[in-house]
Length: 171
Image (tube, rainbow, N blue to C red):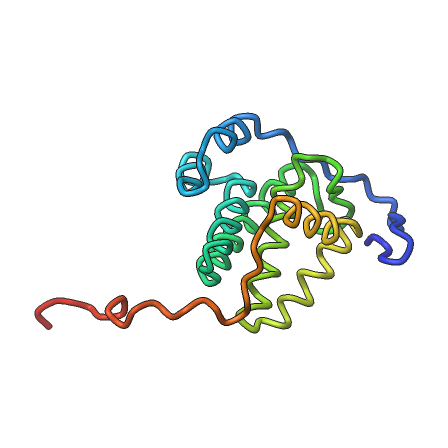
């Protein structure tokens, strides 16, 4: 566990450092935001691809979709962390750029969870981020602000049209 007050690694756990996803980074660099789903399609195990997709959905005002994409990114990130030797605790430093996909997915999930009223999940994800790296939340906030991410008001995601729930057939 990382102390939220001092930022010290109190359990003396080694930091988990994920490998660089060079192919994903290259594809993200040349893919317009409107086509980010293609990156997740091509690299479904990449938490970075899912975090980007969650951010794009959120920026478009699609909070539920953002939540779902971030949830996938979170789980893909847990898989990657475990493959890198993470035992469910210990530092995951934001300063190591390949870790940012996982941390951004956690942040996106936390943001969308707050907007849909999943308060227990917000508390849990805040603690997870603070334990991973006490600077992560502030760093991600700053990165999003620098990128000009628009604010989305909670509750702005309208329900899908009723037709989306109709099962058409002969029954």
